[in-house]
Image (cartoon, rainbow, N blue to C red; front, side, top):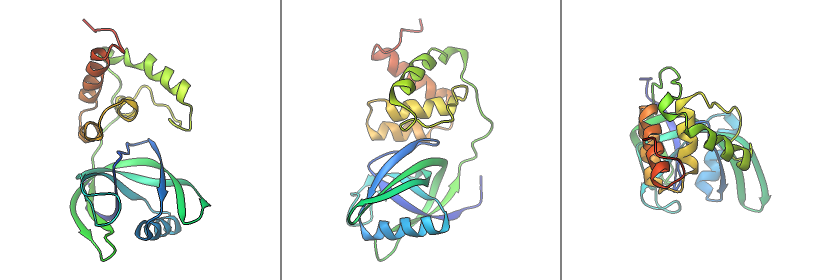
Length: 200
């Protein structure tokens, strides 16, 4: 594991996955300040699913596994609202969290040791044509390039983004350290919901 470091956290009712894209509307002063600092220093922040609390007001308690967010685009076409687009980077684990007087949460975090890229096993190859069709339909703004269809983690994260499941289920898929197990769970879901044929 990496050395712990400080990372500003943005607790949300959404889950960001590595290599994923998310659009955010930022209007609270504390987060406008945080985003401005990150943009000025070209630094990331962390997005975590809220475990308890709300997106606005008092500091929410985040789940302890989140994803690094890097700002790739922004606009301020609405007064007082900053629109940003972020790209997911590395996963991290929150070791400690500190809320300041503005209720802005900073985490002491450690990056996951992701290990080498794992290819999609023969058992899960049937997942790929459906994902390719989704990518073709959704477009690159939703699922940006590079499209790493030979990478089991990348394929699992993209399915975890698009499946109609609860955020807590997305969080559990984010937390899994076994990419093949993540694909097995997704494969079973797709078979149960008649989106793929039974492997048997």
